[in-house]
Image 1: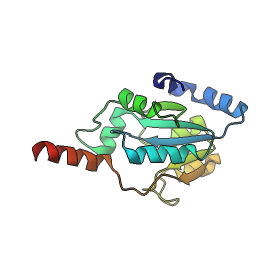
Image 2: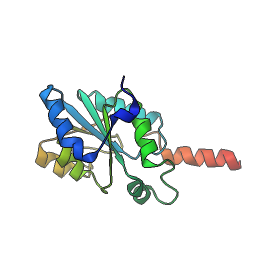
Image 3: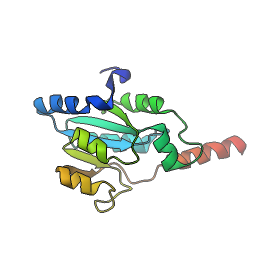
Image 4: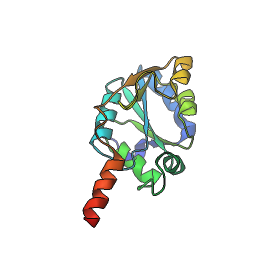
Length: 163
């Protein structure tokens, strides 16, 4: 197993890595997320994503993106720490931090075979479904039912601390 830090890649390297993986005959899957505090729901999502192909690339939202999506006080962990935690999972082959507010440009750069989304989405509600369709990327809904959330985990920690 590779060290987690060796799985972190620069955005500019995505097309080259995708080309190498394709030359090896591998089916590429892209999963994305904030992964602010890694929990069992994230792990199940990433395992489900990996089951869709041979190489799993995970896009981790940059700090500014997480703050915009999740609000004040987030992220709890900085982008490098979050990326390293995700990279430490054996199912994950590569991790890239992306600054955009959506994943359209990342899909265009990587052109994965499959774009995996969590069960909080349906095929009709995936925000980037038009981009995926235009690029010929299959969207797969993976993971367990959305019964875990970082927001709820943080609330229970705060409650226990003040409780």
